[in-house]
Amino acid sequence: MKMNNPQSSKQNPRAAMLGVGLDGDDGEMRLTRGKNFTLVGGSEETHAVMQETAVKVNEELHRKGKTLDETSPEEFRDVLCDVVDKIRRQ
Image (spheres, rainbow, N blue to C red):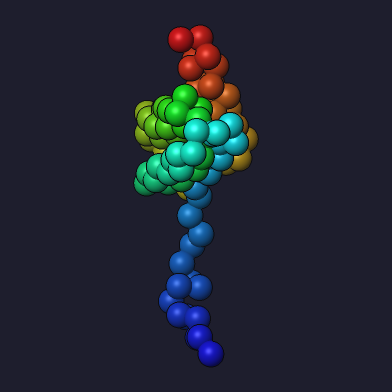
């Protein structure tokens, strides 16, 4: 029987972004991990867009002096929408 580490249950949960691409049909398994994100799957193009999005969300939060852990769901949504709009306009 495996015992849970009592210290691990006392740690605060950390916020993270998860991106899942469903359009990858070339046989490649794409996986990118960052400080607070994990991106899985997708075509080469989709995976690249997910990478750019995660990096730019983190840059925007850094510019605001915040981490993902300190960001409310509403603020995260706003930042994500702004980043996605900027990427689409490129």
